[in-house]
Image 1 (cartoon, rainbow, N blue to C red):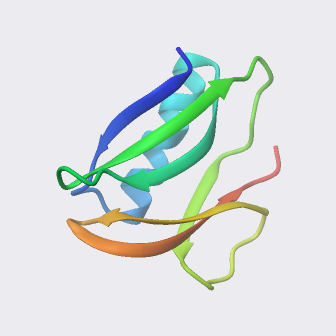
Image 2: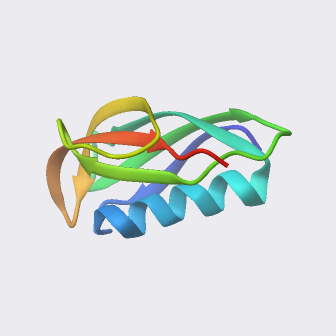
Length: 92
């Protein structure tokens, strides 16, 4: 179901990317926003419905390089610490 979902702020970059991918695939959704929750150490993922298959997501430190298309930049919790990241969509 599209909307906003809380995601643990204790995950590594790779684990957060895996969680986002699973959320997209299981719910036929596409991530449109990712942000820190201002009330606790967790992240909030916002999605919209997406019936088409999407490529995997990769998270890198802000300004880092990754193949694929950059879809958003955000300040989120990575391993419990506020971190600037870039989110990339990989081709199918």
